[in-house]
Image (tube, rainbow, N blue to C red; front, side, top):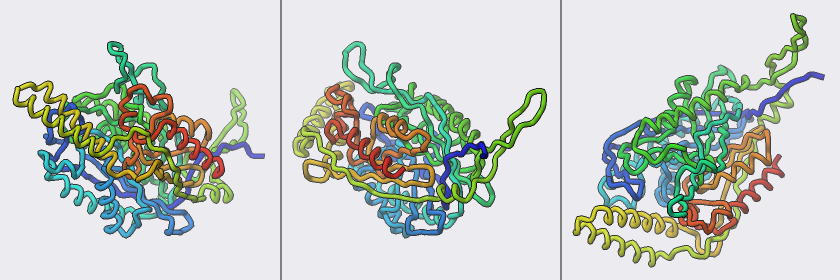
Length: 481
């Protein structure tokens, strides 16, 4: 009997392409209700897209899947649909084979058609059209580079992510800010995709849950937030692109955030980047296991180990490819706002803002502007919802050898990934949220309803929806594994 240790890996075909997608300076940038500017004034770090094409190792291209990491917060329903159609038309890949994972940076600008009449908004439509062309070309390039590859996985730890549901000690109300006693998943799942022939890294996968909200309302620069410096640290060592997939971070953000200092964003990014590299350096060689090779008599009797190729049976298991899209009906909250009432409310606060500006009352005008922004976003939430009492929530999984990849619409509380990883220890589970945007917005855990949290007010689904989704995913994975 040979004593050995196996490592979770996926054998497939992979192709990679990456590039700059930075919008023009001066484009509409205001993401925060408290912001006083509309246009961006410069660039902190370039925005980037990273395209990964994956296909089964056996040469079956009918299951080819494209994953795009995008340095934006998210796109609304119309903008997302237009982008996917453009990428599909320009690359020949069906829409349902394309998954966009937003990094969720809040400093890239809000690319909504409804902003076109605002300063800088006139640049949005042309930018999104150009983005579709860039991504289509990137997809074509990634697919053309498909080559036999292996993904090796390792889990590291990084304390950048912290709970952000804080009770204000003065008012007793909940605010969105660092909560020292809160629970957060510190795990960062790292995957190294290597070319089987050359053994060289093709891409580093980073799956981590933390809102990129280092930079906030006083920042006027286009920025990927902490993701930019994280990429720089990793790519200097690996000489390969990085694909960042945002985890379940609905109640998670950096300890130091909501600032205008780009050095804080870079420091946060370096913290995560070094954690990724620590895990990356611990990864095994592709397609190998660690095997005991016997005793050596020395001052002590030493037990020696070395890496050795996996056998054919293990290689077949690591080449397994299964995928499925599932639909789960989740109940809407009973108090969803009506479109007409929201329009009335927005008109009311727009008039209040005008009056405040006429009276040179800057503070009241700023508060009114923030409330107008809330109304606009609530309108965006309800306009694209499916009629009825439930929302047909779609999610997708891929079983790639020893690992599971999951694509989820919306922003989920951290409970989701903590529970899934606890239920399936030893299985690398890539939890990808904000997949192709967010139609359902936030999914808080049931205990967070009724507290007055921002995430609840922004949600469209009823209490318990997150737990229903977790149960559905867990049951599916239990059968799958």
